[in-house]
Length: 579
Ligand SMILES: Nc1ncnc2c1ncn2[C@@H]1O[C@H](COP(=O)(O)OP(=O)(O)OP(=O)(O)O)[C@@H](O)[C@H]1O
Image (cartoon, rainbow, N blue to C red):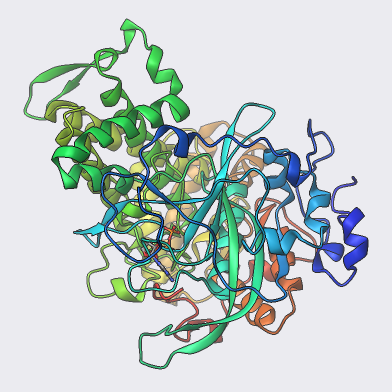
């Protein structure tokens, strides 16, 4: 199939289906190895097969003890479901033929109204610390895993429907999701992937054809919104809380922590089962002494260190693009180091370290942009405590993992910021002053760094013209601030001159890390407003733009614009978790 040509075969039978007119937006599937029909996917249900499950089958909300999952089937009510948007690049990793998106039964299969042949569905049991407080059992209250697929590269991919109905973990809620939050989750997971940031992916988004009641502002005025279901895809949806819940329950369940850790290492960290002796490491204990941790003697400690480093690396990447997750509870921390759960997330527009997109986080700003690195460490600490409660690691190993988290974060963050400014080495003062200036003048985080690559170092420029290349990002600065910026640009140009990198070379390199397009909340909101009227074109166009965030895309300049005034009304750039 030619990239972007509409899915055919069954699509011809459903010519009104949006799947037939999606623009050419996806990564080429031309060279993929295998193209399977849905019926031919290679299922393998290791989670259900190898881990203890719930002995009960009813879906009433309850405490599920001594189990990692409950078998449950999707049950969301569906009436004439429609395919809103889909990702051919996700189909590609599953070896799924993109023509399958055009099948008339696709929306039924991916809303859970019909069953996929070979699937074995379940909801996962997990707990979590929410806003720093242990919340006990949470679990998949509205996400239902359909099973795992082994692709032709022997990669394991889990398919999960979010918003597919109640499970024993639904507590007081309805098990459903609305179109608004589903569009945000679909677009942001694919946008993050294209930015090179580890994330859960999204295969498809379908409307259920049913309304769902939501009190978005918790003001006692619930509104009916269209229901929708995203099919999320990840190698695993295991979270820190998946381990914590069993450690917290103690005694009988401690063995489950070990079983689950063994399962995770076997399937997702197999290299840790065969380490060699050179993995013995020494580290400073912070009190002037040093200690030695032999990671080869304890695979669980080595695993914790890897989870810590993946998490550190993930959060460094978030800081690099200005992504603020918004709800970094331990149930939203992936053991694979993926971004998971796109709720009230937000990308920075104006640079503001205290920015939080989450209205429920406003008093303390626990999860604001600048706190994310420390919260990641706190969360690793909680995850490590669960492993230590199960006696899989000792205190020293946990401290070591935390130290590794810190050093990995600093290394990656400094490397990212160094690339963003196009210098060969990290310059703390220069970058610190820049961020300070940006915060004072509320400069747009994305557009500023993109413009910065226009600064030339190989020509003489009079002082009064130094800010010209940055003009579009510094329009609002007052006269008194011009001096601070001019002085910074002078120092920056001096650093560039001594770097030995040509202006052209630096521009290419900087543009490969400083995106032109990010998924600003107002862009999402425009697409949502249209989709709620039944027009899915903007969602699809936004996906297409966000799939090439580093490319200048002629004709798409409007997607790089700053938020318009209406974007500052409540509910657009500040969101609660009511999704
Ligand atoms: N409408 C709902 N019905 C049932 N459970 C829900 C609903 N919304 C959230 N939950 C559950 O509340 C808990 C915390 O909510 P959170 O907002 O983190 O979840 P989510 O967005 O549904 O989930 P995920 O982390 O799977 O993306 C989770 O256990 C989640 O399953």
